[in-house]
Image (cartoon, rainbow, N blue to C red; front, side):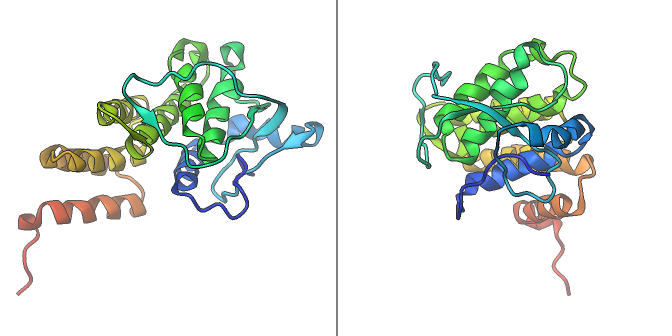
Length: 238
């Protein structure tokens, strides 16, 4: 099963980041089982090709984007794709006040996948400001962790302005607080620390990641980065 539409021939790096979110969500796909069975009854369906994804987001009605982007003062978001309309999903994602997951979380991911970062921040910020709306959802921590991760990626990689890295750092940290097994947040946070010259913090973050005993690919990546950052701890072969 799939998630959100990936534009034909689209190779922008933001799709890779959405794929990461899809992989995180697919950690437990049981809450999405009803999506596939209802797909034929929904008039419009959009997909993102991802073999690891265990979702099928179903579009209902298409609306024009309105609202007020919740972007911190002094930060400019840099879009990389043409504008797309607001799309709402009809996925059985579990209990949520006002169907906030379908009306804000998944639309935010869809905007991100299409390079509409300004609107992605708008939708994700609305969702993240209201954790009480998903308090009864058994998968709340996954949704909130992914939401913080995706917004952090926008501040880190797709924005300019004073304070953007501080907001990115806070979101990566919140992502880990909600779900300590969101391994990508550790990797990105370590990269952020290195960008601002905080080498020891980057090393500490990577060690925290390894303590979570991540999958081999993530484990190897973290160890490779540590080897570069701590060459003195890697004895030279004789």
